Length: 284
Image (cartoon, rainbow, N blue to C red; front, side):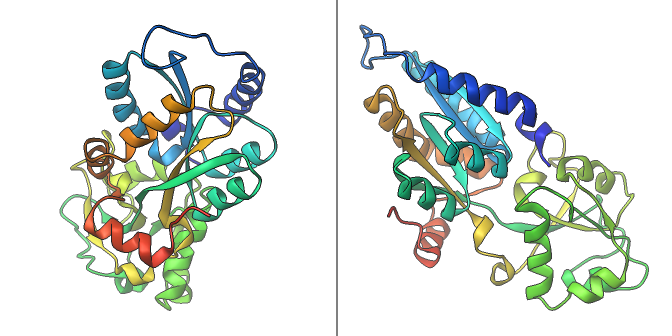
């Protein structure tokens, strides 16, 4: 799981969800500024936390609005929102979740936000000479894989290996299995393993940037489900104008550059536009 990435535990998240549901019934106070309220509640999947935190700070500075942000792992968020939890804006992973929220009349609309991609990572200097996925199956190569990570983590990694027809060969090499990608990265940095497969975003964190080698994996091997992140306004938005303005800000060039810096493919980039069409990332 990525609880440390998002800065919130499952228990804390669920408590927050209950409190948010209660707060949502309060009437907004009319303010003298451009919006009716001075705060906006935003949830996102935890992998986006660093990028959202930076973008939120800019939005707060420029608009005098407080962003009440929570990041948590995708499975908990989806289950909670579909089960009655409340937020005003949601940055979600997996296109189907956004479609499910729209179908349940919980989300007013969604837009493509960004996409993730996967890379091979090795310790600095790549001492084992890893060049491709095939090298993970070579005898003696010490592989660490986050196969026990919360969805879609481990499943996506196995999906890549399966599509490359390397799943049996790599598993025969008896890779060490980790349950948390964040905890796994220091092991690669310290040379406890020769290679792993992770999302590129994990190579851009403050505690990992410049400390691993990243080797591209052919995009044709990526499982489509986990690639897409969307952002949408929920029906509980107290001030629709504020929620719309925030979503426009997050989807604009300046904020998209922040997401790119943190290892994502921006939706407004040429590559992002190609993925929007290829994966059908359109409101329903």
